[in-house]
Amino acid sequence: DRVKDEAADAIAQFRALGLETMLLTGDHTESAREVAGQVGIDNVLAEVLPEQKAAEIERLQAAGRHVAMVGDGVNDAPALATADIGIAMGTGTDAAIEAGDLTLMRGDLMLAADAIRLSRRTLGTIKTNLFWAFFYNVAAIPLAALGFLNPMFAGAAMALSSVMVVANSLRLRGFRALAR
Image (cartoon, rainbow, N blue to C red; front, top):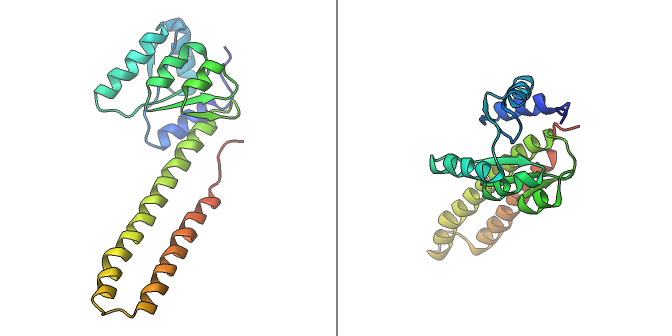
């Protein structure tokens, strides 16, 4: 297979996100090393069968790693299903799409980096929203129950808390993808 035009940029984005990359392939070792060199991947495991791909992912997980797998073929399906997050290319086989947790609608590898960036931002937003919701409940409800806070102010604060959660969540609309 020909190396995708955006592959080197996608690998650079993965590295910028603090991710370690690895090429797991059934192809010959020389071909795999050449492709890995072109796109900037240091770790290569070549000439592996589909079950061996899944076993390698299990080995990494047993070592305490969180593993994401990007794949598009029938041979990738077991590894996609085994990974903590399986990212299937929408241009791939039905088996890969079915085994993956997330399907990218185009064959653009930059979408995988964008998906990780968006999921991290979403998780951060959720944590912020939970913090403010718990902060409100821990502080305002006891004050209102003890009579130190007027119920009108407590109700207004609760409504304001909901508005803040929604407004904070709407900031995700400003997310800009790197993929073309």
